[in-house]
Structure formats: C-alpha cells, structure tokens
Picture 1: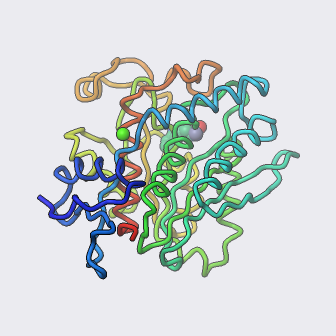
Picture 2: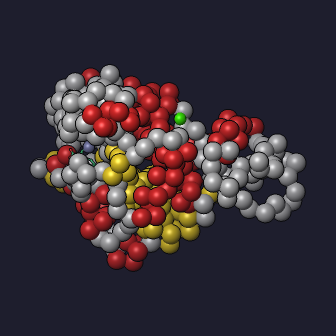
Amino acid sequence: MHSSHSRHTPVAVAALAAAALAVGLLAPTVHAAPAAPAAPATPAPTAVSAPDIPVANVKAHLTQFQQIAKANGGNRAHGRSGYKASLDYVKGKLDAAGFTTSVQQFSSSGATGYNLIADWPGGDTSRTVMAGAHLDSVTEGPGINDNGSGSAGILETALAVSRAQLKPDKHLRFAWWGAEELGMVGSQHYVNSLAADDRSKISGYLNFDMIGSPNPGYFVYDDDPTLEKVFKDYFATLSLPTEIETEGDGRSDHAPFKNAGIPVGGLFSGADYTKTAAQAQKWGGSAGKEFDACYHASCDTSANIDDTALDHNSDAIAYALWQLAAGTPSS
Ligand code: TRP
Ligand code: CA
Ligand code: ZN
C-alpha cells in the first residue's frame, strides 16, 4: 500500500480517487502521491498513477462528432466542412484546458488539409512522447469508430492531463491528423516538416486508430518493445488477453514515424477482418463476424461502438502516457 493519498488539492480529487483505486493494480514502483497544502515544503518527487478515463466523457466527444457529421453532409472527410468542424471542436477543448495548440496546413487532392498539434507546457522537449489519431473520416459516413474513437480517446486523455495538472519529466504532445484516409497524408506531412534534430527528440509515437470496434479485439502494435510492453502491462492488470496487431501493419499514421526511425506503438480493436472462434472465446462477441462490420460505411455511427472496448483502450492510453512521461504530481 502506498503512503500518501490523504493529501490532495480540490481540483485533483476525482483523479486522485481514481489513482488511489488503481494503485493496487499497478506495479509496485508506481505510487499515488498527491500534493496539497499539508505537504512538506520539498516532498520527494514520486510518480503519480494514471487516472481512470471516464468513458462517458469519451462518448460525449463521439456524440459531438456524430452531430458534426450530421450537420455537414454526413461525414467528416478531408476537404469537407465536417473535417474542419471536428478540428475546431477538439481545438476548443484543448485551448480551454491550457494546451498550446497549432494548426498545420497542407494540400492534398486539391483541398486544404489540417493537422492539429497540442503541446502540454513543460517537460523535457528533447524527450517528447507523442500520441496521435486521425480525425478525418471517409466520405461514406461519420467515421465514429474510424476514427472518432481514437480522436476522442486521446482528447479525453489530454483533458485528464490538464485536470491532473501533470508535471511530466518528458514533454507530452498530442496530434490529430488530417487526410489519413487518403494515405496518411497529414501525418506524413508532419514528419516531413520536422528537421532531423526534431525527429530525434520524439522518444516515441503512439497511434490510436479504431479503438471502440463493436465486435472488439484487443490488439497491441508489435513494434517498439518498450511501447508494446506498457500496453501489455496495462491489459495484464485487467487480466484481459491481447494479440499482436496483424490487420495490415503500417496502415495508419504510425507508419510515417516508423519510417523516420521513431519508435512507435499503438492499440487497435479491429476493422474488416473476421473474429475467429478462439478470439470470441477469449474476448466475447461474435465469431465469424467482422470486428467492425461498418468499417468505412455509412453505419459507422455512434451506435457502432463497444463501450467496454472504448473504456479499456482509453484507460490504456492514459496508463501508457503517465508511465512513459513519468509524471509527477503538481504542487
Ligand atoms: N484507418 C485504417 C485504414 O483504413 C484502419 C485500419 C485498418 C488499421 N487496418 C489497420 C489501423 C491496422 C491500424 C492498424 O486502413
Ligand atoms: Ca475508464
Ligand atoms: Zn482509421
């Protein structure tokens, strides 16, 4: 049992309660160590546990993406009004939470595209941990699982960083990519825009593309061993078996980072491949059916989400970022 969860600031109460609950599940090197008026003047810095990400908040972002699609011709695709409206929604939340945001423009297929980059002030920028998700849908539908889910998961994790007023050792950066569905155009543009020196400052890039599939699997990218392990460690605390992601390695925005020599990792709950009997045995759901039968279709709506998968994967994002950035409590 850890020793110091009685001290806390009002703003951090919810996160700390979650951290106190979670700490028993975590490795013994992880301790909840909230700061407060009663704390000694110079407490030893101690890593703080990741919060439980409220899945209701993640779903509320999905509801917004759904409404944005509905108000903009049914999709949130590159070059369409629903894309920029999605970006404005995410940016507004991040700006209000104290992130430093920037919008990076590029051109693709005759239309202007946009990446949104959000930096959490502080931490060692020569050791930057990035989390990213593509924000565009295909033109066929609203793209709520692909990829409202990853976009909402990292957004709510970023907002949790702000709620905790995390003071990580490493720098934290979040990114929402444009035009992934046209061939990872936005993320490739971002990587191309970095000088070699800037690339070397990115310790790792974590990608989240489809994390709430309605007939879910729990897939971890089998790439950088350290980044793979942090996710496996999290799912081990849930006694939830994972598999290596094999449904098209390099089919999302981690590919440009990997090709530039940056360590990558990520999570995936399955697209148009079929769940096997063995997978249904360990994860539940329907054998012989696609992980996401609405992949790239008009039925990829807010009904096309498994809440449990969205919850576990969102919590896994927070766990990974807190671990990798080695957060310390605010004071
Ligand atoms: N957006 C990706 C795509 O349309 C979805 C996807 C398919 C994916 N297979 C994947 C994402 C494997 C990550 C890993 O291609
Ligand atoms: Ca949760
Ligand atoms: Zn996708």
